[in-house]
Length: 378
Image (cartoon, rainbow, N blue to C red; front, side, top):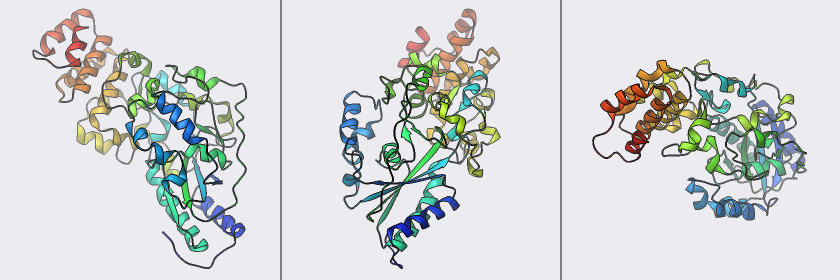
């Protein structure tokens, strides 16, 4: 969009934008040149050649646009990077101990941040357009844009060894949004990478998803499997999944810089009590309608009920809670095979051999059922 108004000089314009951004609830603001990261194309190509994108084929399909802002929008000259702090009030690592409860990633315990940030970005972009007679475009994660490298170029933080943007003020807990513009603005100084010799984020990963510092292989990432993956959870990741039903915060939560992060004060990012460690016994009873109502407004809703129930069943299998067996058995007739297979696996983790045989006699498919039948016969 482009709206003509009194044109401000770049210095006054940036000052105006910073003041408005703060009033809108943004806690980080920085500017990068649109051509500040010529290294991205090579790094992205390297990751894709190594298949670190796992089943996220959209990364291959959009690699050309993703590799450079100029490819996405040739007129782009400057990128304004905004951040909102979402730091939790306690260390989410402790939530892994609650085995009969569902562990939902910190970022998904309230409103979908995409919706929260996008409206505010549009307001700020409109202010820029009016006062610079400039074209603007806003992006929040869903477009083929590599936000984190530009956040580092804009001085907001640096990409840690876990690839997450890390900040002196906010630790690992920053939501990012970008405004592209054809206005030429003075870029901020790029933030230095200051992880030093610390490797806490690499060592805590239960599946060794980091081939090397600053590299992430999604084929070993629990957050990929319980969030992006469409099919069955591979067997080698089911036990490590623990009670994680959406996302994984481990490599964020252990970062030493989090000690400087203040708890998020944005009301719409405060965790909803019903999304903080809900009982697995409750979630196992949900049908599609219950699921949609319960997770209305949350990023969890994007999973769809079948994939969510798959994740809940894996967590249930890891719960050591045999009282949940009757609820698991009820899911053995679910229409989706990813649910049926997860149910079989969960039963085998909790039931005695005699009980497994009893359930098998009643529920084992009499006709071919792909991998579900194989799971029964393991």
